[in-house]
Amino acid sequence: MTDEIRTDDAVEREVDIESRREPDGGGVTSQSRRSFIKTATLATGGAAVATVGGGVMHELDLVKPAHAAEGGIEGTPMAGKWWPSRWGEGDQTGATNHMTPAVALDAASLIKTGKVYSLGRVYEYGMPLFGQRVFALRIPGAPTGGAYGKNQVIWHDEILTTEIGQVGTQFDGLAHIGARVGEAGDLSQEMFYNGFTTRDLHNNDSEAGSTAGAYGLQKLGMEHVKPFFCRGVLFDVMGLKGRMLDKGEEITVADLKACLDRQGMTEDDITEGCAALWRTGWGENLWMKDNARFNSGEPGIGVGAGEWLAAKGISVGAADCWAIECVPNPDPNLAFPVHQIFLTKNGIHILENVRLDHLAADGVYKFAFIFSTLPIKGATGSPGNPIAVV
Image 1 (cartoon, one colour):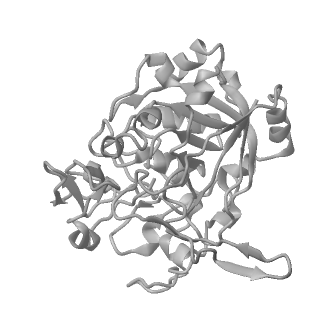
Image 2 (cartoon, rainbow, N blue to C red; image 1 turned 120 degrees about the vertical axis):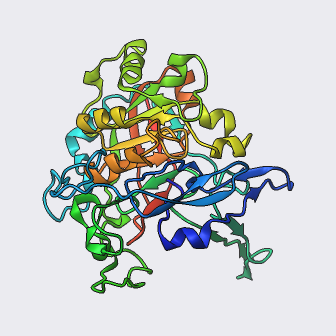
C-alpha cells in the first residue's frame, strides 16, 4: 500500500494535500488514499478524513471501536488475538517460512518451456504516485566520472530519491501495516505481525514517543524476508468477467472459484506457500494512461476472499492495482482490512502494481514465481521485478 492512513493530530497537519500533475502540466494524477475513507467509524479510532467533492479533505470525528479483552478489535476482521504466529513467538519471517526445498521443487516442476515473464512495472517519472510521494532520478555529471587510464574509462552513476518500498511495483513488509487495539498514544497497544508493537519496532521505552526508529525499524525489517521460489497461481478475474473491473468492485470467493473452473484448475492447485495473483484490468488499462482514475480507487479482493486465501496458506498476494483489495471497501466502516488480514494477522506479504496481462493472454495460470526483495535492514518494503517462468 503506497500511503498510510493518518489519524489524530497528523490529520490536522495534512488535510490540505496538494495534487500531483502530469509532466505536461495537465490534470490531477494522484491524491492521498486518505480520500477513500468515507466513514463515520474506523477500526483505528480517533480521527480520519473524508472526501467531499473535488478531493477536498475534511476531518471527521470517529466513534472509537470496541476492543476485545483478548487483544483484538470486536466487529472487525481483527477481532480476537492473532499472536503468537504459527511459526512461534518472536518470528519475524512470516509466510516466507514456507520457502522450503519442497516448495521450490514443486515450482521448478512447472517449468516446461523456459519462457520468462517480467511482472514488474517500469519505475519512471509520471507513474501513478500517492499524496506527496516522490520518484526522482538524477545522473550526476555528463559523464559522472573519468576518463582514467590509457584506455580512458568513463562512467555514469545515479542518485535516486524515493520512498523505496512504496512506489511502482512494491512489496509490503510485515512492519508496513498494523492495528491499534488500545487507547491512542499507548505504543504497546499498536500491534503488528506476531504481536510486535510500535514500541518494539522503534525500540522506544517512552510513553510520549520518539524518533528512536527513524533510521530503520528494530523489528520486522526487510532483512528477514526469504527469497521467493514457489508456485504462482493467477486468477484471471478480468477474463472471467469479460471486462475491466470497476472501482470498489469486490472479488469474492465465488469469483476466485469460478476463475479456477474457467482455467481448468481446482482448489488443489492452491498449494501451501504459493503466490496468489489476481488480474482486474485496472493496471493494464489505466497505468500511465489515466493516473487520476487509477488513483481514485480500485477493484480487488474483499474480506471473504482475503480470509479464504489466508486459510489456504499462501505466502504472498499480488494484483495489478495499488492495494490488491477493493477501495472503497463495501463496508464503509473498514479501511484496508485485507492488508491487516494478510500482513498483520497471517504474515502474508503483499505485492502491488504487478503486470499480469501477458500471462492471461498466453493462458498461463500456473508457473514458477521468483522474487527476491532488497534486504534493507529496518525497511518496511521493497521495490523489485518479480518474474514468472513456465
